[in-house]
Length: 111
Length: 109
Image (tube, rainbow over all chains, first blue to last red; front, side):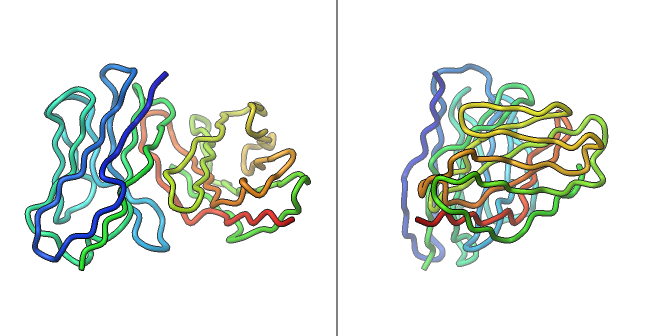
């Protein structure tokens, strides 16, 4: 069966510091991969999605970037974190355009 | 994708059926109705989806009206662990998921 992992689970970072969040999927090949953010008390917002290695689409302009160095690995990065980058970051996957499945999330607090 | 309307919150007694409504009056013929839930501090969990017919799985039942303008998610025997935010999402095959505010379901003993 397929599983999706995210790490770290929780992260506290100072403003201006870099960020790297990782997401990996097991048990499938060529998945579509997604990064969402959920600000406190808000809904989920799609940030990036990828249909293949090196293929990244950005949904909203922001301080973050995404990369997909391997088929089942999706990385969310920032060179300099802002206070507004705080939130709950969720990775998701699916095959073709079928049901999306979400990971456990990373809670980021920027101070 | 069509917009959905859900009540902001609902209460349900433990052991009773929880019926969560969703209005999607502008849904088009090729749009699916998806339900996810998010338990506090966890990632969203897929529950069920449907196009026209009613659907049932081990978690829930989805009842879609004949005109497809509304639907109801039914948790047949709600437990305290079903307390969560429930999202009703309408999306066309190939489009991205767009989450709204959802319904906060509180299951009480």
